[in-house]
Image 1 (cartoon, rainbow, N blue to C red):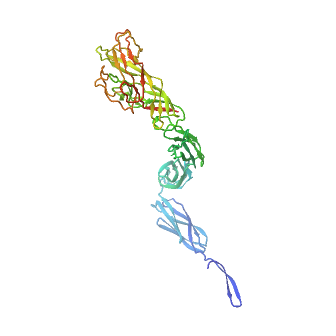
Image 2 (cartoon, helix red, strand yellow):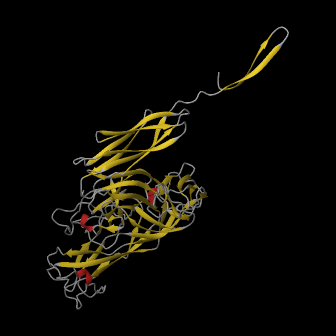
Image 3 (spheres, rainbow, N blue to C red):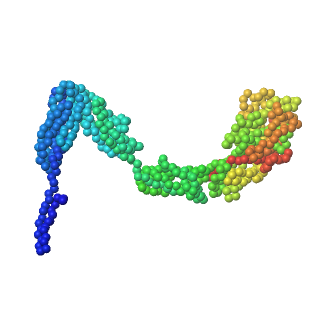
Amino acid sequence: LAAGTYTHGVSTANDTATAQITLDTQPDPTNFQVSSIESNSPVTEGETLTIDATVENTGDQQGTQTVTLSVLGTADDQQVTLAGGASQTVTLSVATQTGDAGQYAASVTTANDTVSTTVRVKAPNAPADFQLSGVSSDSPVTEGDTLDVTATVQNVGDQQGTQTVALSVNGTERDSQSVQLAGGASQTISLSWATGSGDAGNYTATVTSANDTGTTSVEVQSSAPEPATISGSVAASGNGTAIAGATVSAGSQSTTSAADGSYTLSVGGGSTYTVTADAEGYQSSSQTVSPAAGETVTVDFDLAAESGDGGDGKYNLTGPTDFTGYVLGDDAYLHTGTPDNSRPITYSRCRDGQPAPSEQKPFFLPTDECITFEGTVFPSNNSWVGDVNFEPVTGIINDTKTQTLGNVYYEADFSTVGGARGTFDPTTGETSLDTTVSINVSIWPVGSSIFSTFSPAKNPYSQRTNEVTDPTCTIPNVQIEASSEKSFTSGSPFPGVGTTVSGERLNESLYGKVVTDDFSVGSAMDCNDNYFGVNMNNQVDLEQGLPAPAGDNEAVYDIKLNLQD
C-alpha cells in the first residue's frame, strides 16, 4: 500500500469492530552528492594542491562514505558521516613534485557521485600565461547597435606579461585590446562589435589570448520596421483608361499594374518614399508619401501621353496640339517632271531630324538642316495644318559651252508660299499632304572670284552677294534643273545641254521629295559688276502623288511629328 492512513475491522453476524492504521513512506537510502569543489590552483611545483569539496547526503538515512580526490596519479581520501539532508565541506590535498608542471583534471568521488575540475601546476618562475574566464555579452542587440563582450583575463604565470586579447564573431575579428598583467594578477576587459544593417542573426563570439580561448553565443535582431502598404491605380489622363503593365516603384520595391490598372507595394513603415509610375508612351509621374507602420496609403496616377513620333499610336490628345516635324527617309530633294539636261539639287539624308550628308555622296548638295514642318494637329478630325521649311542648297555650275566660264558657285533658296495641310492617323502615325503649296526659288552668286577657273581658297558660301539681274548684259545660259532621277550620265554629275539623264525613281513610300519646275541660271563675264543673273519661273507648285508623268511636279512626305501638349 502507499503511505497514508487506512481503516480496518472485523465483522460477525451480530457485531462489527474497526480501527485505524497509518503506513509511513519508506526512507530514502543514503546518497552522497558532491555539490561544489574549489582549489588553490594554480600551484608551483613542490607546493600542495588543495581541493575543498562540499558533500551533501540527499537521502533520508544517515550514512558513512569515503570521499576521494584523484589527481596527478595519486589520491587522498577521507571518511565522512552525514545524517539525512546534512552536508559537509571536506578538504583533500595532494603534494606536487618537480616536473609536475602542466594542466590536470582533479576528480572528487563518493559512492554515488563524481565531480571534476581543472587544476594547473606551474614551474617555478613560470612565464606569463593569460587564461580567460567569465566570457559574457549584452546580447541580444538590434542592427546598428554595439554589442559589448566582457571577459576576465588572469595571468596564471609568475612573470609579468603583455598580450593582445581579441574579439571575433564567426571568424571575423571585430575588436582587440592590449592587456598587461603581473604574475597572478587579473583584469576584466570589454570588447565591442558595431553591428550594421544586414547583420541580423545568431553568432558565436570568441575571445582569445595567446594562451586561451573563451566563447559565448550572441544574437543580433533585425531593425526592419513593421511593413506598410502603398496601393492605387494607373490610368491615362483625360479619358481615365486603365494602363496595364505600368511599372510602379517606391524605394527598392517595384511592381507592375494589373489589367485594371491597380497595383500594390509593400514597404517599411515610418519612412518617406517617392512613388513613381512609368508606362510606355506616357510621361512618368511621381508622388511622395510617408506611410506609418501598418498603414495603407492610396496613391493614384493619371499619366499624360508623352511627346514623340506619330508612329507609336499612343497619343492621347484632347485638343489642338502644336507640333514640329521633319521629312524622314534616305533622301529629300527637289525634282522636275522634265528630267532632261538636269542638275539634281538633292537634300541630305535625314536621320532623326539631323542631316547626314556623308551618306549621300556624290550626288548631294549639303544643307545645315532637314526639310521641316511646323503646324497644329486637330484630334477632332485627325487633320493638321502648317508650313513647310526648306534649307538653302548649294552647288557648282560648270559651263559646258565653248565659251567656258569655269566653275560658278551658287546658292539657292526655296521658300513656301501659302500653308500646307493634311491628315494624321494617331494609330499608325501616317500623314498625308492634301493641298497644293507654292515654292519660290531664288539663286544667289557666291564667292569673290566666281569666274575663276579654280575653286576659291575659302568656303565660297560664306560670301553671298546681292541677287541681281541685268537685262543689258549678254548672259550665256547654263541650265540647272532639279531631278528625282537616281542615276546620272556616267562620268559627269552635270550633263551637257541636250543630254538625257536616265534612271529609276526612288521608293516613294520611304523618301520625302519636293518637286520643282525647270529653271535656268545665266552667268555674265562682261557686265560692269560681274552680275550673276537668273532666268527662271517665278513659282513652283507642289502636288501630292507619285509617280507623275513628264512635265508634272509633285511632292511626297514621310513626316515624323514631335507633338507638344
